[in-house]
Amino acid sequence: MKTNKTYEHFDNGVKVVQLDDRYKFTMDSILLAKFCTVKQSDHVCEFCAGNGVISLHLYSQNPFTKLYFVEIQKSMCDLIFENINISNLIDKTVVLNKDIKDLQMSDFEKKLDVVVCNPPYQKLNGNKLNECYEIAICRHELLVKFEDIVKSVSKIIKNKGKFYFMLPTERCTEAVLTLKKYNFEIKKMKFLFTNKDEAYLMLAEAVFDAKSGVKVFK
Image (cartoon, rainbow, N blue to C red; front, side, top):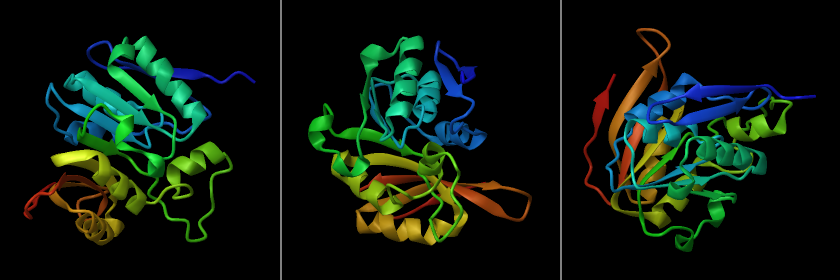
């Protein structure tokens, strides 16, 4: 059966295709991209990239020098290749179809300035998984845990490099402790609310080898 495609058009000629029967990005991903700060000279990498929407949207708003995608699912990497091709970004990008835990510094030209990640942040805990395994991998910690991600980022990011991510607010304490274990300090946080009283998601900027002190935004 043929899968329908949906095309999203961003600024600077960037386009993103989604498959209707696969994991589709939400506004949370766009908000994370808008939360990030990059410079023109930066080398940026997206972990758990999916179809690459976060870093592609980030590039569409603030073009930078080099973009890496790390994604374990071959089908998702095929989508990334389609997206960078229709966006004319082949010469500025590298797609790594591999496990985050296997990353080496040799996969990159230099230490990274920015890493961004929308991780699979639902713990297993006996929760029911989506019938589509590709979607389940994106939503649940089946193949990678948050600590695995932070550990890998710490190996390939430069001093004072920035790591942007999102997690449910219930995992805030875990995130802080894990980041400190690998020499990161959260410097900025923003919360997304379901209503005026309860936050459901945190966006965070963690800086490698930085002093403590965090600014919180609503």
